[in-house]
Amino acid sequence: MPGLSREIVEHRLPIQKGFKPFKQPARRFEPSIVLQIKNEIENLLKAGFIRAARYVDWVSNIVPVRKKNGKLRVCIDFRNLNLATPKDEYPMPIADMLVDSAAGNEILSFMDGHAGYNQIYIAEEDVAKTAFRCPGSIGTFEWKKVQELMKEMLSVTLERVSRTVNGKADALARLAKELADPDLDEVHVTIKNRKILSPANLNPEEESKEIQKANTLNIEVEDDWRESFINYFKYNELPKEKPKQVQLKKRAMRFAFVNNTLYRRSYD
Image (tube, rainbow, N blue to C red):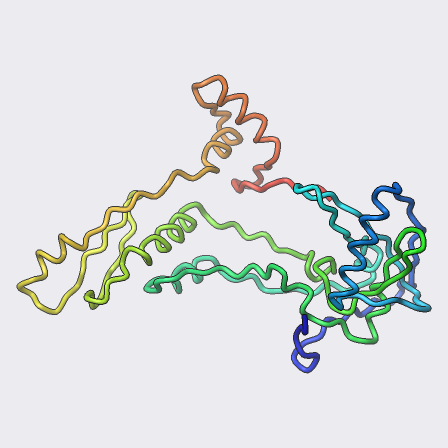
């Protein structure tokens, strides 16, 4: 993958004053995992994401993580480097503005940056800081392109998005498909009580009543899956059926309810 030009953007890793280079001690792995790690490193080498490292001051260890499909993901323990790197803030978009700007568009798309985090090169003077040690005789390598493990990518600001806004986004996505009619000059959308009414505003007054009835849509918004968890945390409310009660209690262990906001638990 060619990646973005260095003239456009580069990822830099400045070190704060008072921090010295740190080399993590080597870790041991099971022989069965070492072979899988070697295969993953070879794939990264072929893709041009990493290169062999020489005479480095910062060395981190790899952390193999088993995926749900049984494959192995090779992560890097950059905690020491993260502590030495100053925090970089990124402004988060406002959900209400994103939803409002989507009105009137037939397609509502989301960009999550999947498979794009390896597209930005690291500045040459900072590449050596990303060196990581592999088990056995595989060697030591460093990242040519940035991965999603740096501190800048880990500094995430959580902003609550209300269930009402989420419902609007779902409704707008459905309306974009239903209202793809070139004969309509203008369509006004009003969201009210889980239904969306869209009276057509047409120039010919004599045909407005008939077309208004024909182009009125009633779209049901599906139940929010978070509602049962929020009611359980907030009011200790459980479903009437015993099996559903047991299932809800088990699944609730994966979430946390803080300041009237539901969060999914994660594990480092």
